[in-house]
Image (cartoon, rainbow, N blue to C red; front, top):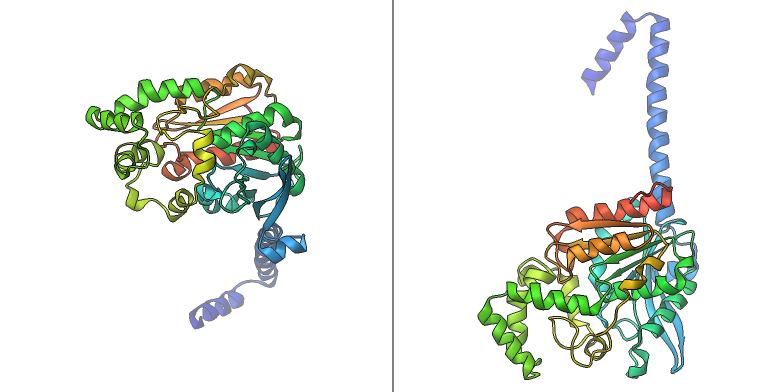
Length: 365
């Protein structure tokens, strides 16, 4: 500090008065510009973190939304993260019967981009009411639930992006086919548009990648209906989940994923998806679900996300992006079913670019 002052004093003695004035003006302008820039950044950050609704501020973003059904009124859990008037993403988790915990990695990426998003547990999931009436577990009723959540959160065509992964992708497609006029953007992640096509891919491609002896044992347990046998899950964890669900050793799985599995509602899951992890089979209500021929009806700007090691066929996912009217495909070359964890390098930049391209009006296929 003393050295700096000495140099400045010498410079002032040497410089003529006009030159000194110019130097001081330039320095002042630079400092002012820097302060102004920092002020703008601080303002943006402050706006993003500001909750104008006193209730939301009090609860830290949590809002329980009442859902009206033929079987009564129930409450579902939502949590707002951030504040952006033109970019609001509602996250539809997988399962069915999963939780928003599958998406907690979004906290590491979307806030830095100023994108507002909502965690949401569907009816029957851990943080929401969990009625036991199976008549509630239909695609049609879930679509109406999402519509009620949209209204409860004040989302509309000027800001509403719907993101659905796995079963959430089914729900997102079904919602778009009925209510796409309320959407600004649609993201279908890791879900094919046909359960029979998914089953065929699981049978023809995913299954044969497993060690034949292991696959034979898995199939034997499934044929016996012995899904509660600890050996069944042991085989899946080691030979299937770490290859096609989340490509890292189980002991390294993030806490959010472990919690999501611990909180899974098996009643909803088995009723709609079935007990097998190799496709949708048995009496599962989603077994024959197929909207592949209706994709052309989706006119809202759409991103389809596929991954090399996913349980869903990435080439089929790419085809889906060409079937919708305004589609883009995001391929995750290192990812599996939960690419938001095992291929963040591609997943999040692609997702963020899509949201911002749509918001700025610069979207191209």
